Figure 1 (cartoon, rainbow, N blue to C red):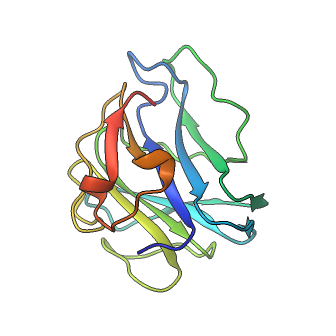
Figure 2: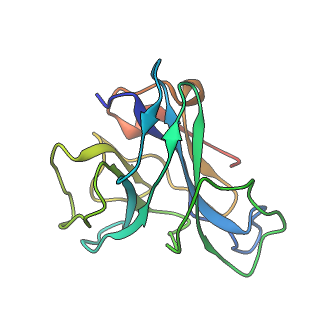
Length: 167
């Protein structure tokens, strides 16, 4: 089971037709009791069956019980800007299926289903070929995968840990 820092929300429909938000994003949550530095960490993304990982570097500290917003690529649709992000990347995520890893390194992952102690949390969504136990349901331009219990639930089963809802 993941330690205190987990991926709490994944949204790849940003900027698409019918989307509210202009950008894709990944949200991280500190479900622990102490602050955690994410200097030198990254969030990484690969397509549902891909082995090429794109990297967005993280900096700063996530206080206990706090969220950390990583803004990714913008599309031409959407009507609302995200709140001020804690980190900004340029990854264009799939609205329906993909893989997101929270890594305690900035080195890019490799392979379709990477493993190792440097992977802090992993989320496969939609038809992803790799996940913790089973991927979440299929997302859309208007739905995100949101970790249950405000980010606190983590049984290492993406399908049961996440609910699909408006981002």
